[in-house]
Amino acid sequence: MPEETKGQVIVVKHELEKFKDLAHKLNYVLTRQQKQYGVLVFICTILSAILEMIGVSAIMPMVEGIMGTDALYGKWYLQPFIAIFHIQNKSTLLVIVCVGVMIIYIIKNLYFIAYTWLVKKYTYKINRELGVRVMESYMAQGYIFFVNNNSGKLIQGISGDVSAVNIIITNIFNFMTKALSILIIGIFILLKEPFISIFLLILAGICVLAIQFSFKKSMHRYGVLQREAAWNLNQARYEMIQGSKEILVTRRQDFFKKRFVDGIREQNKCSIKIEMAMTVPAYIIEMACIIGLIAAVTIQVAINGTSVDTVAGLSAIAVATFRILPAVGAVSSALNAMQSSIPSFNASYETIRKVNELEEAMAKNMQREEIVAEEDIRLRDELTIDHIYYRYPNVEEYVLKDVFLKIKAKSSIGIIGTSGAGKTTFVDVLLGLLEPEKGRILLDGRDITTLGIQWNKNIGYVPQSVYLVDEDIRANIAFGIATEQIDDDMVWRALEMAQLADFIRQQPKGLDTRVGEMGIRFSGGQRQRVAIARALYMNPEILVLDEATAALDNETENALMEAIDALQGEKTLIVVAHRLTTIRRCDCIYEVEHGKLVERTKEEVFGSSIS
Image 1: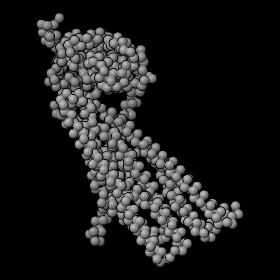
Image 2 (image 1 turned 45 degrees about the vertical axis):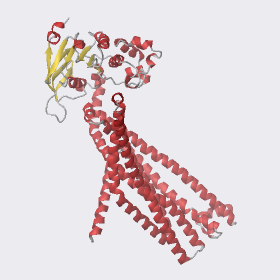
Image 3 (image 1 turned 45 degrees about the horizontal axis):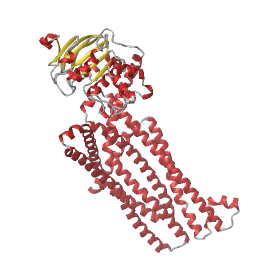
Image 4 (image 1 turned 120 degrees about the vertical axis):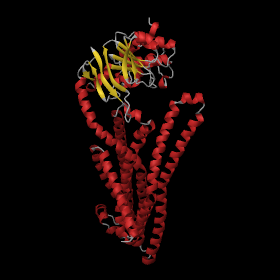
């Protein structure tokens, strides 16, 4: 075998392996129900190709009738009409044929509308369900996953990568629909005009293969570049919106605008190249096939003349060709679209693999939580931090080392320490966001990892930087609860405890008062009070305040501390602070030092200033 032929065989084998790999991954990504629905869509795809062929073949008898021949009387499918209606007139028979053709095309096109709706519904259902599964996988991997991953990358995973699955499935059905149409119509015209049919099919096949081999590498490369560009653009958007205040103050608009413009330009550049590669082949194929058709028809007429049979046959060939040409172009476009979407699809495949790995563990946790959820578990005696060790992934140094602490119910403790000492890490471990490498956290002797949602019900959290949604006060206090399920009495109780109720009553809209994006319509102290009210909405036993007053001025801090001090003896308070005034009324004070928790006396912390 010549070296050139061997090379072509290797290339074909490589392409087949790629599509085999794609089929394997699709089989893995799709659920059983989605695959069953896909079989239904595939059956409808076959029917659409058959209807396409019927539409093309219906033209031939109409042309024969228009040319005034008696050939229509010999058509087997017209015999029932001729017998029933006693048709003797050619014109009457032609009218019946024309009406029949109209009915066929009406039915065909109505079917194609329904088929298009079915495919769109199927692919977008997959898109929605995959998006949900990807989001669930993100949440199931815990807080450390978000710490270690870029927000632009995560947004790309939920939107762009999931959409790539939609694009690939849509184009698979496009490919199958058009390929089956080409096959069935090709067989029809092959029986009518073998010479022209074989010539055109070979020509179209050569064009498609040549285009695929020319574009395949560049399409994959542009797909990778487009994904990276989308990732960077998402990040630029996020940073520009989140950092708007600092950007305006420092007059850095031009820098961030340039990043945004560069991101759009790069994404558009890739998109243009991909779309051109999907569009241009159709024109090339059409040009080649029309030239080929004219040449073949000229040869056919020169040989056979212009008899009625020849003209009718050539009319059918012409109609078939003009139906096949868009289909051939669509096949080429579908293949190119799949090539460009494969990088994003592969990323989705890896994410779904992670989902499937996590689902078993998630199911076990859910089952355990359902059992525990039936109990009413509340902190009654003490919370024990039992010899906790923690270090971040890929870091040798422990942030927390052998941390041991017993916290009595209804007591208050203060946590101090220098920046970077591990205070926030301690809080994240306590909240259950980070899993300790060694040690346990015990609620009245029960490991919190076995309590599931019951632990979350026991603990309220007030961060330094409050996340408020652009909704009303009600929605921000009852964070993440559907409007119809919010208990206004519980909202008011939480506002009373946070000493924000009087302010809300003074607002014209009361609980319907909107806070603005990130609470921009409220002052810093009011935002912190909203955060405290949110933490208290579910009436937790433990309240954790992580630098909750660090960003406030002294007067606002003092006012906020009045609200916190009012909770002394009602809640178990864990107060992490830089400012010593924040922890002055705590029962016990601990310092995070070199990863350990060291108890300090008030004299050590406050010196002679202690009151």
